[in-house]
Amino acid sequence: MALLYTEKYFLMNHTLIKRPSGFIPVAMSLAALAIVIAHAAMFGVAREADEGTAAHLWQILMAGQLPVVLFFAVKWLPIAPGRALPVLALQVAAALAAMFPVWWFQW
Image: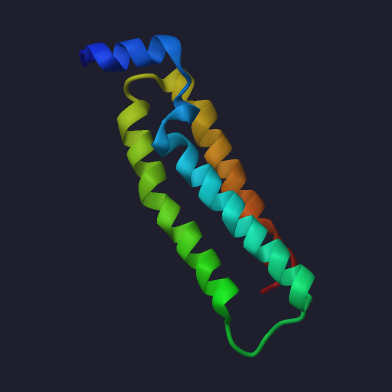
């Protein structure tokens, strides 16, 4: 697959984490983690009878990043797998970090 001039220039001079499809999923995961930590700090870790706003925001952030990660993988893995794999690993690690407290506290 031939690279466009702009993509070739970009790959030579920048990292893929600076692309919106590279950093937006990480930012969404960190926001989801911040919501979980803030909720636990304000209201404790006891299970609630009904899901609140924090749970819905967490779900939207976690589900909303899936199309962005898929777009990133489809666009950059064929072009630059060596540069795309570390960014994908960071995206997955950030998502797992946001999921861990939910699993740990069994929310």
